[in-house]
Length: 393
Image 1 (cartoon, rainbow, N blue to C red):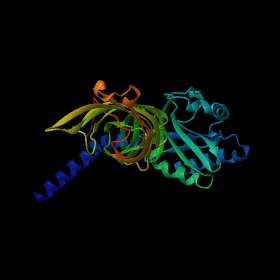
Image 2 (cartoon, rainbow, N blue to C red):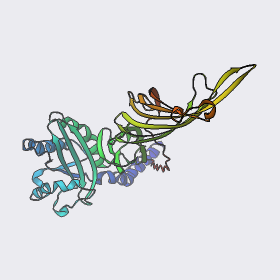
Image 3 (tube, one colour):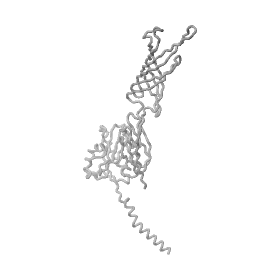
Image 4 (cartoon, rainbow, N blue to C red):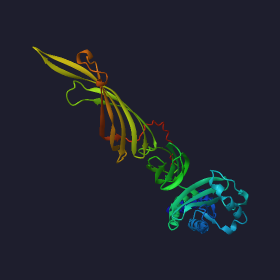
């Protein structure tokens, strides 16, 4: 009986393998390796001496792809007469998200094209993968370096680039910035200008960095899972002081050290212009009202006479931010000008003064030390929509 049971279970195992194993293995066995062709990179440096890089860079990429088991590399001699036609229009392959290709003539599923620009010491190499069937761009990355280092820089980004070609373990990112038009870098590789929509990347930890002229660089680390869709909003803060007009409205508490009876408010209006970290401005302050009491001794009593004064200030100022942090920016400054004091409510018949004697002009200079809190920031409200789609396997 035991022998019959064992025989029966063995028979069931054989039947299971014959029926279900082919169904399980079929998708894996029938999965087609994408055929990838690498074209000669185009020289946009205007330096004929760097023409050799066109083939050298293409050969470097092809050598790396030939080691990848999930990709079938198409040799250049298999491209036939269509090769010259494609290389002649290669500059157009970088103009947009879709390209015009002689699809029926290309014996490949994916074309890898590249251009390089700059100078020998500062080369920029852009590499793009184009789906031949849909004529759409499925991956684009950029490497920078000198003639001596550009090959290693290009090789460093090929691991992710190959993952994009095979379409395995990918996530999708959308990067938006305020303002837009910022250069977006994924793990140090340029991927486009914001907004970047449906950017494909591999699962795992990545660093998003955005840069824009006259704005501080923003950076964010993220962890993404396979098939996840993530939207990232980044607000760019302007650099401390750019070349721009300046206007201010402020207030002071005018409080003389001695003699006067009260302190009073002083409103200030300023206009100017900033140059880098320096600011040149003109300020007008008015009116500060204060009073002063004179005491006179007369026979058998004392006479008090109170006079009112109005203060007006006209100043030209210079401020310089000698250090700038993310939240504070201390500065020093100097203001020079004059203060106009108008004596009001005087008893003219009693003191016999003229109109000119009621005005006092004083040359003044003010040294300033201050701190900007959250320098060059602005407050923005986001209506943020985060789309997360995690699939389980």
